[in-house]
Image 1 (cartoon, rainbow over the protein chains, first blue to last red):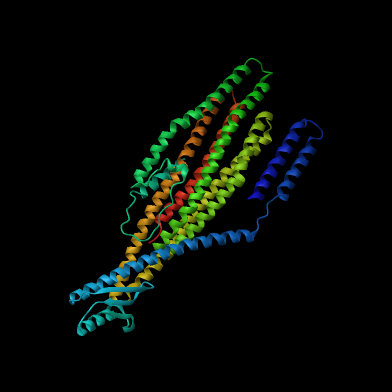
Image 2: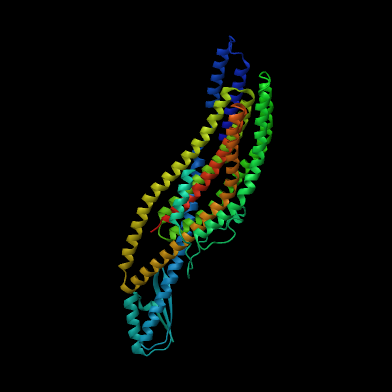
Length: 155
Length: 351
């Protein structure tokens, strides 16, 4: 902003000096038109010679910085939302499986690992007969699209 | 002024209650009000109406001291204008001398006061800009969490760019321009040179024009990005919902419910942060706006009084000093409006 400031000061300074010079000169003086012309030329010259140079690269870099800041803020928001969503999915899936196990007469502790907002690994803690165990495993595989490797039983 | 009131009414209409957030794990809290505005908004209000009333209550307490300090200067100037008019009636030849003395007296009284108010305006602008830099990322993050990724990014970039340009223009060009305006005004009062008068009017016109253009371009940018990126985000979100519901039934249902819960939670927090942000901006602006506004109003009245008693000479100088107050008010107002409009756009945005 400094070049623009100096430009403004330059123009106002020149205009003030020209105004004072013209004021000091008597109106009917034979030199008055010439002085007016010179003042006009000086004003035009000062206007064009002091125009501030704006560097394109600096503006581009500044815009880039703003875009990066915006991206950082957006990423932070998305991370927060993702973490919140994973927590909600994990909690809901755990309750859902625990309820199902309860209807089968089991008292299990369920842990769900969520990756990319999808349940990826389910760990079941508790005792169960082989037939009920198989029934629950099949139900989980069907409803949660989990493979056998990602379904862990801990008795 | 009418536009400012209209915008405030719209904001009041848009926002009714600061909603409470239950059990949310996301954290999008608006930054605390800066020190200068904390006496007007000392606590986090439960609703926008309560917050606004608290700010207005604080402003009400400031009216009398601001009026008293502005009155003191106005009475002194009215005295000078009266004495000048009275003495000019006795001798026509001594009128330029009285005018010169009057110019010196008025300049001496008003220069230091004006300088104080200019500094106050600049400090407020810096404070608003600094607060905006803290509020913007919070609003951007919460809007992105709500699904308005493109809109959040565009709003952040636009507001940050306009804030930086406006703050730089004000401190780098407009404030030196205001000082130049004052110098030219005093010089033209002394010398009565028409050219100085024209340059002075040119500077004033340029500052007013620049402020208007920045506000128009900014609101235009917000309107366009709101429509364009809002549509893009809505389509992306719709596509995501279709994909989610296409997954295995149970998992799909859980994902859909979780996504809905997160969107609602983010929207609630975004609104709470936005409302507090708006109140904070108002709290920062209100005090200085009132003080400068009071000075502006009383100088206008003094100038009108001068025109009826003394004529066009010294009262024009007083009018120029009131114009300076008007310019500072406009600069502070535009900066405040920039953040108010932007915050409302953030609150309106999203799915």
